[in-house]
Length: 455
Image (cartoon, rainbow, N blue to C red; front, side, top):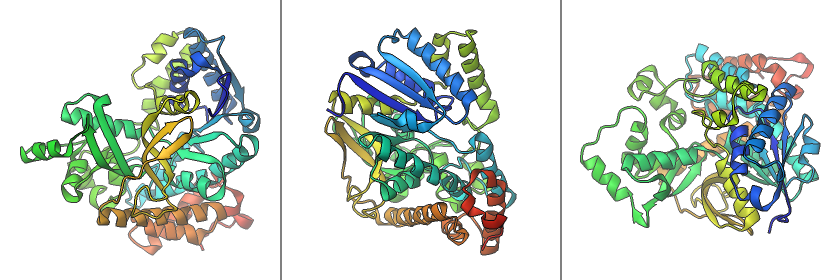
């Protein structure tokens, strides 16, 4: 067993997430962990106001689900006491918050560069990495010191480089998790008219661009059924069109969804014409970085905290789904020895995807039980897919080096490898503008003697 069945401590670093924190607490309360163990949930955030809100809401959820005698909720603005004695550390930090996410996409837009998500690739993904890589590394080092046996599960983006820096620079048991894998599975099931739980999905690739290497229902391969649908002349407009077109070209279905896939191929899908053709939404449409989208979530959380609305109304609120259910299932498996196949987890490759670098971080399925997390070998990807994926992996590596050193030339190299800019001068100007705009969110080593010029 990982820990005694008596007590389990879960530390959530970055507890200000509007949807993740309530869904995690709900998931824990609905799990066997809350029935068979004594749980401590340590909420940590640097923003005391949002921390107090989430602490109050979390305690109300625990109370409404009759868990006060088994589940204890704590709050911290300092992560070190939150980490002490933790069995699991979950990271959902968002350096700079929504404001930074908007700056990430607004400045490139002045140069004609569009984003659909902005948290993984493109100039926005690079800037997000420059902000988050040092922070994740600091958290992982604290985990090494204060909870060396803990599992570190990161949900913050860009997930691949963040998972890579933890693996590269520390001995923490770090893994990257993304809710997108469940949306990918569910979308395939809906397209085929199958029940979601019946779809057996194996993927290989990197976060936000992986490929279904095996797709079954009760051991029956689903790719022949997809072929039949294609031969029947199915026409998909909007979501799913990019995925299906890529399947026709590469022979595997990519995921998790069109707006993520599109960002890896800006020349193909991020022109005005292509975005209209494929009905790809622009950032921040349809996500919680949109101020209009955020407002209802903020209002209901505040109302629950003040007693104006019930916990039942919160848990039934559209969009307040159980984002945390995946990590809850993992923790149940590890603590209670309940074997599961987790459909997608970000781990060091070590041959899981045969023709990607062994040292890189890949997203693959994993079997888990009380003995640990055991990634699945899914074989090789098509050569063309392995080619552009390897280039992206190397671009991430350059980005990590830049983030840890403040070397502007490395940051420029990352931008040029990224594929979004149309020239060296554009990249130099864009980098200068973005660094200056986010100066207060970056380590001081980016600005020695207040220098802001690109080298």
